[in-house]
Amino acid sequence: MDTKTYTETHGNIPFNWYEALNSETIDWVNLQRKSRNWVTCACGNQCDIIPRDKLGIPLDWFLSYAGISFNMAILYFDKEFALQNLDIIEKRSLILIKEMKSSCESK
Image (tube, rainbow, N blue to C red):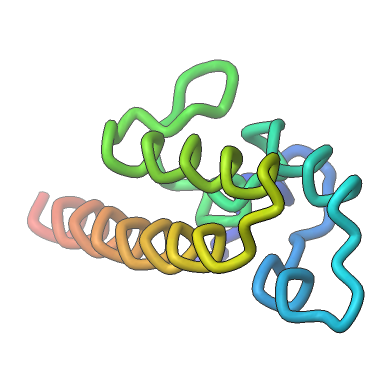
């Protein structure tokens, strides 16, 4: 199965949030622009098989809440909170993807 990020399915290049947040000089303006769009935010950089609404908001409430928290951390220049939420987004996305793949295999 050829998987892409949600970002890629909308014609964008995936963005490495960890690299951007751990760089010597953080471009907060660029990060704020990216984080407020569900296509380019941290959730958008997850696999496109995660169910979303037409705006790109994950249907999983936990994942969408983590995405909102991530955006708020970026808006307030809070690197540590952003990294914590990024970890939560990655872990929750892996759980959802694993559940979806096992569901598909059992059919």
